[in-house]
Amino acid sequence: MTQEEIKQAQQECQVTMAKFREQMERLAGIVESYEGYSPEAFEESVKERMPELRRHTQVFLVRLQIFVEILNNRILRGDSDESLERS
Image (cartoon, rainbow, N blue to C red; front, side, top):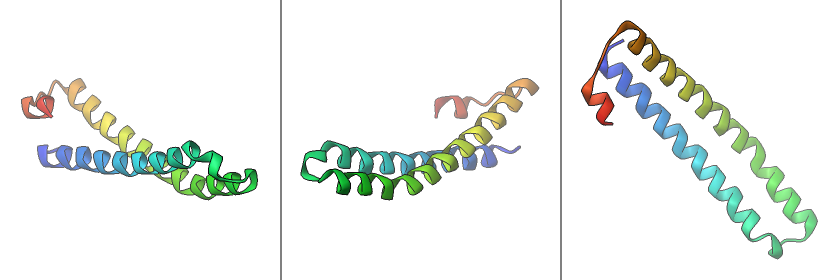
């Protein structure tokens, strides 16, 4: 795997993490303002967020797993890259 491919995998992982974090922040905002909702509206708002949160969670975990596998294979082969360690 080339250095460019490793950087690409790292960037994809960072992008999906940002999307996951955004979804968590939206959900946290709903939870923090729960007093402004009726119980039914609160439940509906949370349920509306769950499919998107689940999707972003799954995508992030897959990207993270791929990135870790890439790094593990480099370590097992004895490859080293100082620029990757600085990232």
